[in-house]
Image (tube, rainbow, N blue to C red; front, side):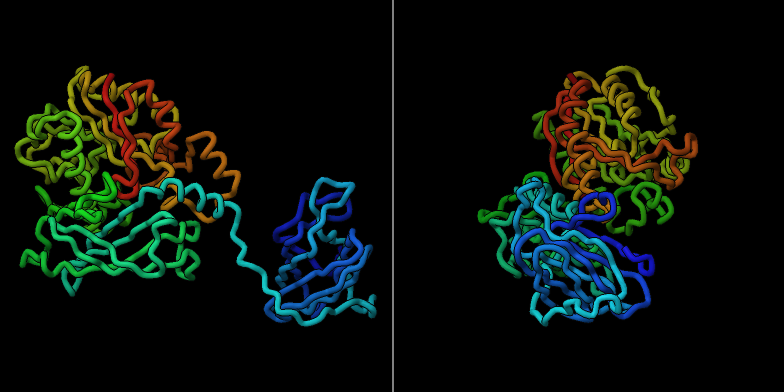
Length: 491
């Protein structure tokens, strides 16, 4: 290529070969330099065909190709040097198993080839090109969205409390660009208007999501307590009979719970920059669903359960909602000494203590009937998780339950899928089952800096690996805050 102008082969090229590169039938290039035109030399391996190009300056243009070398002139501008191309027809060369289009041999000055083809106007526009990683994520995610995902959020403002909804439906159940969703609030089914937002919306930070996503909102004025807060709320997406349509995806509001509400700084250490309402709503949802799950699994009332361990209590997001009948049986531990001290001063009736980043815990064998941890396994290295699973099994009673959340397929693809993920990254996650994205510095691991990670598991990995320590009863997708709950029984 000419040394007077650098060329960026943006997409659609194989690995460079000696002196030239081959393209696929669709490819993109960006030219850098000051010249107003670029002379592109391309080699075509068939008798005749067309090369269509498109840029903002030139629009669509078509060039006739003949076998051998073709010289084409592209009109550039300083602010518009990106071109998309498409070769037709698509044909495989007999001497090569690859389906090849154009071989880019050089970029030269236009003055050297006055006979070069400048193309003819053409209405061609390239299709929206989706990065391969996003395509893969979309297809994988749809397999986990299949039963549906219902995500309500409660917000309070000048107009009073509002329920904001996100609903993901499988392709076969989408209702067009708008639909009404039956949402049960305290037994009353409301038809809430939702609109589908295309995944390619300019302001969308999650372009890899499937298009079966609807959003809407509803005023909760009819459920106002009269003090600026809603009354206690039980919310779920309803079926035709008014029953819960998506198992395990109800949401619950229980006000502020017991004790004081932590500051934004305390919340940040456990949930990032989460608003207070989100902190309270997600904590109440977790607690209510856990109590109901226990009653379903054990056949007993939650008030009859034995001792409970909140492993990674933070600033009491979940424990603050336990009823008075069990609070004296709750023990909370965390490696964050700052939040443990806050709990000691602000959450009455719950025994808390700081623990080390590594086992053991300061409890006898088989102490607890329930051990639960929200977003703790999401922050442990692969080596550390084994030590902690063994330790949690030690302190759980035989037949008792260990409930831990993970960032698995649903949450990883919906909320923790950075745009820079490559297809290889996605393949590694799906094949290996575990991804460690490095340490998080939120201040909780001062006793051992770097121990607090950001990790994701696949469901298959959890079933295969964690079953060494517990019986895997179930994995409930989108249980709380888009994390999936692993339900385990002590062997």
